[in-house]
Structure formats: structure tokens, C-alpha cells
Image (cartoon, rainbow, N blue to C red):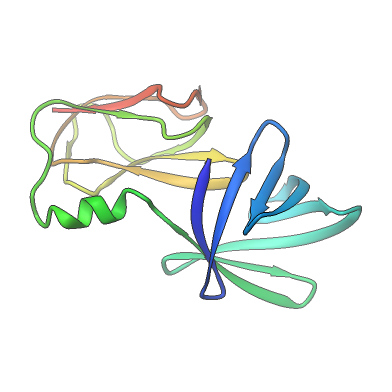
Amino acid sequence: MRLDIRINGVKRSAEFDLARREVTIDGRKIVADAAEISPGTYSILLHGQSLEVTVEQSGNGWLLRTAGREFHLEIADPRSWRRGRAGSIELEGRQEIAAPMPGKIVRVLAAPGEKVEAGQGLLVIEAMKMQNEIRSPKSGTLERLAREGHTVRAGEILAVVT
């Protein structure tokens, strides 16, 4: 999976290989292992060195703290530019929302049968210790929604909005 990220305002290109636990940032390969030791606190083994990193949501990204240093991380959503071009136009008809990546549903934000607005959060998927909110592509009625705790594959249908 390839993403554009900003670390302390500097744009970087990141590629994630989940199977190998590798991240390549601007062409530099990094092999790391991470384990959540408490909510928002992770133990990360990086180049044989153990780091404790705290992560908290901050504005449009995350604030990471480790070894007395702070880093602000933003992940650019490659779909946001396309969505922004449409202005206020919403998708029409029945919309199936597929998982953008494999992961686990850690939080459900709506319920089947509920009226939802375009852009409203429906659920949160965790992949590689990062949480991603899945939003409704249109206003309508939530016909179907995956359940919390469910492990999903990339492309699996998570929700249907009519």
C-alpha cells in the first residue's frame, strides 16, 4: 500500500508491506515490529532498539512522542482530491463501501437502518496499528454494516448505503 504522508510538515512517500512488516519511506527501507502495550502507547523494535511511542489524534493527523521528541504525522487520503473536485455533488444510488485494506473493525459509529449524511463516519478499521475511519459516500439509509471485532480482507463489503 502506497501513501503520501507528512512528518512535521515535510511530504514523504511511504510504502507499506504488511506481510514483511516493512515500511519504505522515500526509498529507504525500514523493518520494524510494533506492539500496543496500553491504549495509545506502543513498543516499537526498530533496528534492534526498543522505543516507547505514544500516539494521540491531533487535528488532521496524529502526534507521536518518543525519547523526548514530538512528530506530527498526517496521511494524505488519495481519494480526497477526487472527492473535492465534485464540490457538493454526492454519489447516487445504492453504494457499497469496501474495505480499503485488510484489518480489524475496532469501532462502529452507526447502526443499520440509521439515516446517515455524506461524509459521516460509519466505522473504524485498524491496520498496522493505525486507525482509519470509513465514511459514508452519500446521504441515505444505512442498509448493512459490518460488526465490531470482525476481521476484514481488502475489498470486502463493509457497509451499504441506499
